[in-house]
Length: 168
View 1 (cartoon, one colour):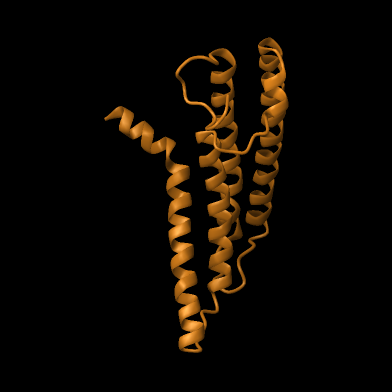
View 2 (view 1 turned 120 degrees about the vertical axis):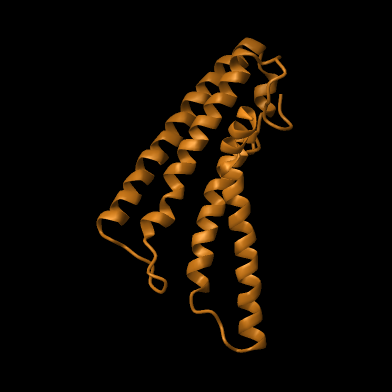
C-alpha cells in the first residue's frame, strides 16, 4: 500500500500532463467543430488552450526529467576516461541544479507578482497566479528528480538503478 501511494505521488507530474493533454485535445476539437460547422466559436478557447499548454509543458518536462528522458548529447563525454566522466557528470549536476534553482526562485516571484497585483485572465477572469503556479512546482520537481537521478548515476553508475533512457 505504501509503495503504491509513493508511486502515485511520484507520478503526479505525469497525471497533470496527461489530463492537460486530454482536455487540450478535447476543447480544441470541439472549438474547431463549433467554429466551422455551426459558425459559433468559443470565445474562451484561446485562454483555456494557453493555460493547458503551460501546464502540459511544465508538468511534461518534470515527468521527462524524472524518467531521464530529456535529450543529452554525450558523444564527446563517452570518449573521456571513466574517472573524468564522473567528474564531468558532477559538474553537469551542479550547473543544472543551479539553473533549475534559478528558474524555481524566479517563477515563485512571477506567481507572487501575479497574486499581489490580482491579475486575472481577460475572458474567464481566472487568477493568473494559479495558471503560472505550474512553473515553480514543476521546476522544483525537476530539480529534485534530476538530483536523485544524477547522484544515482554518479555514485552507483553500474547499479541496476533507473538511468537516462538510451544513455550510458
